[in-house]
Length: 306
Image 1 (cartoon, rainbow, N blue to C red):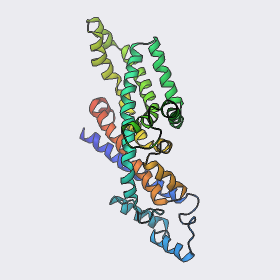
Image 2 (cartoon, rainbow, N blue to C red; image 1 turned 90 degrees about the vertical axis):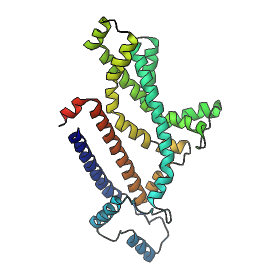
Image 3 (cartoon, rainbow, N blue to C red; image 1 turned 135 degrees about the vertical axis):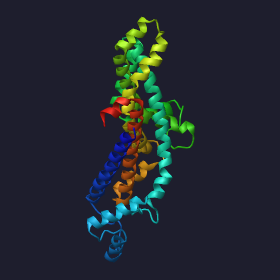
């Protein structure tokens, strides 16, 4: 087990390094320059470029950035005066994380329930309902779902606020809009996995021994059918927690999305690079945790990857 974990950790570190390197050079290739929009004299512009190290060769800039990054320093924003990227991430990420966690809990819990119910009632009306929900969830973009929820539940029926983030009632619509796609995906995967497990010999043996359907479902079917869901939980967790940009804009949530979009428009290299690297590290970390948990849950994974 220790060897398996070590290999996964090394692979995660190499992935993060490659990600940082690629993103660093891609950001430098963005059209425009950070200081072109500001009305600066050539002397002031030269001083700004020297301050941020743009007057040095690209490889030197890369080495300096990596050295700072190893100390947890994402650098200073080029548009927000005397503000570091770390400060802005610290201020805005809690909002994005809170929304993402609420959406994730909603998506996984409802998705698993719908998948189990659908598989247990295959061919019945409730099965068709669950399938329709899954199809709609994987077909409708989150920004369309957010607008629809705002119109009906916020404007037309007045059940929930349509914008801002000031209480529990403000989180329901954006969390569901963000969770809908993941909810549908989890439901679809769980349904297919449950149906596959149902045809296995050990399920038939359990039924022939007179084991109750409830015990078969809970102890045998769900326990084995949930493994494929675990394999996609790493990317799913990261996509939900980091996929809040559009939803934050629609619902006026003061999360990282607003600063990220503005930094791209303003050519704020430090912000774009820092937030991209932050989210990339977060994604790799989530995948690493899921890989380790999957190896603990299924010894065959450890054996196969030695």
